[in-house]
Length: 417
Image (cartoon, rainbow, N blue to C red; front, side, top):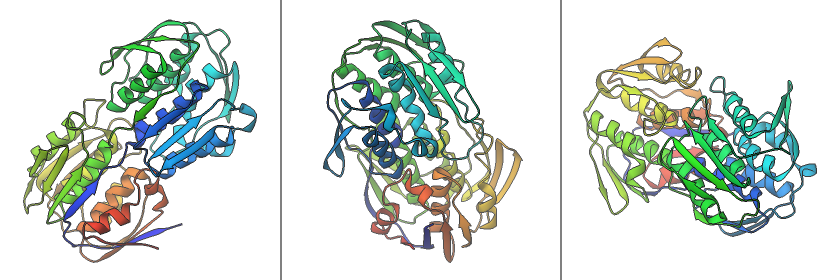
């Protein structure tokens, strides 16, 4: 176990470079399984989850060549199911993204259920539903599941929910099927488009990207791809909140404005001064912020993964803010740790809290429950009075690269022990 020791109240000033998006990188890595040709990913974040998925591919027999810290070429010509690391599959939620590519690559597969952050029930029902619609036979057991994909055919699918990973899995499965598959109620987050960019380079024809209606015309023979991972909108939102509470000015480099609409809307609503210049987002902290209401939603709504940092922002806003996250019933349970730090938060039910501010935050010794809540606690500790200790920060490492070094470069007093 590792910890962060954070001395709060230090001004944040300077420049931070936004890394590639974890949620874009992981499906792109999984897509390399679809072809025997080399695939190159640029701007790849070397975070823990990415490293684990690369290790899973390497253990299966993929040839992995790192050109530099952000660029990798992977060739899956010799991958084998016999060498798959089932323990790593169990530990990594993102391993579910291998379901579509492996189902297309191998006629029969058997995998354990994936792990990951405990945020509430996160079933694979939408994934299995989509594969069954394509003609797969999916058998579910207590600890694992199997997929027989020998009779996959293009079809028309209406997903029961606009699940991002289910949409990505079906896009990848359909990419290897000759003919046109239509996916209705598809997710349309920016990282879904990033995957679509790679599939098009591989020889797939895709219509409807950026919408909830996708048409995917696949091929049994797919080429490689060379794609840049988009900047991480979740990093942008997290650093933006830290900067807003940091009593200085922070420049976030390499952002895509079109990917930030819901985040910028909430910053504006809260009264956080910002401006966009040449793919940079510049945050200037001030003393007074306004309360706001926030409901997470599918794109282009506010992302659930940024709910926790913005709840910390709400603790420093004048008035009452309602935070509503309907997606996962366990996602707001971290707020009891903010209460221990002095936040005035009332939990209405597992999906809603009311935050009353501004509250004076005090240092505490607390534990990170997951990636995003862990980052929120780091932000709270930066704004608190005194020295905080945050345990289990290896969970934060799964989504944020070298966070203590990057915050330290802005003036934060943060140490990993």
